[in-house]
Amino acid sequence: MNLPDEGVTDDLYANPGLPEHAWRPTDVDPKLEKRAERQVATLMTLSAICTILLLVSYFTVDKDATFAGLGAQNLALGLSLAGALLFIGVGVIQWARKLMADHEIVEMRHPAASSQEDREATIAALNAGLEESGIGRRPLVRNSLLGAVGLLGLPAIVMLRDLGPTPNQVADAQDYPGAGLENTVWEEGTRVVRDVVGTPIRPGDLQIGDLVNAEPETLYNGGPDGEPLEGVVLQIAKSKAAVVVVRMEPEEITPAPGRENWNVDGITSYSKICTHVGCPISLYERTTHHLLCPCHQSTFDLADAGRVVFGPAARPLPQLPLAVDSEGYLVAQGDFNEPVGPSFWERG
Image (cartoon, rainbow, N blue to C red; front, side):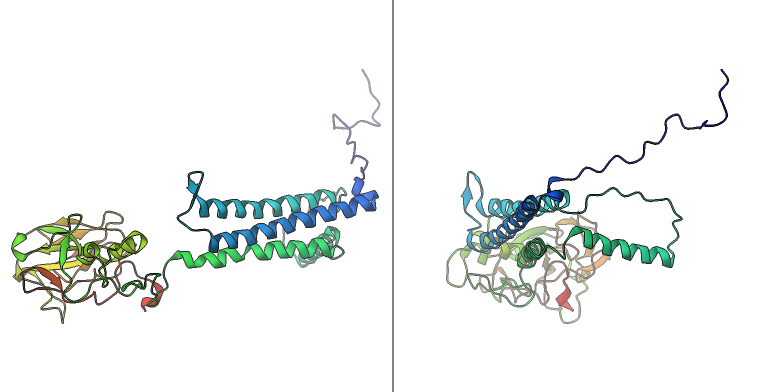
């Protein structure tokens, strides 16, 4: 079949162009527009209320309380935060679907070079977007959005206090010694007892090459008032005061200056908490006197003041000075002379 040259095209289908624009109800009815605006403002207000409920739950709900078998505080925090985020998201979607500009845009292809003209066009587009969103003409939506988003940042600030105790000497609710990061419950004369069983240790109980996981007797007999430690107070005290006690030949020990009398007949004691990220360690190699952390392989030489010989740990293990009391049991001469566990900013 012979076709005329005119009107011939390479396209199989002609470009139909953009469809005719369909106006939304809110574009033509001011009442519906105001109604949609109130809906968006209501959603933003509900988000702000949920954020306030989150803060109230954080301070008022007992962390040990339960609801339907779940932690009541975590449940309240989770639901209120979910509501705050949900209402903001739904509100923004409603705003975009019913109130923002709704006209079709055709963008012509252009070079990707970031020229001055492009930057000016971008700024103009941003300004046009702000204008088309109506944020300047709709103070109710704008102010409710700013209030909801602004309040949503408060929980992040408030909950910073749950990252841990402050580096200063902060007492916990029981005002118990060693509540801060600088000190532990070890004191002069505190007996060194075996972990789990709580029995005191005599030097004769340890053979050359032995390693014993130990704790202060305070964890079993109670604090200064004689009351046994329980709950969070016990866990905090135990997490910082745990030690390892090892025995080696006295001539194999190279004490740090000023620590010549910190061991008893070759028996030395070091913090059990790795100075890298705080893992408990007790993997001991008798022949080298090296203590290995299983988490990141930091290795400490217990015969050389706990010096780091391998791995990412930045400082030696803190050493607990030992002595023997009148009944022949191992006791501490005092607390560690430096904070235990991983380093923190305020140590410097």
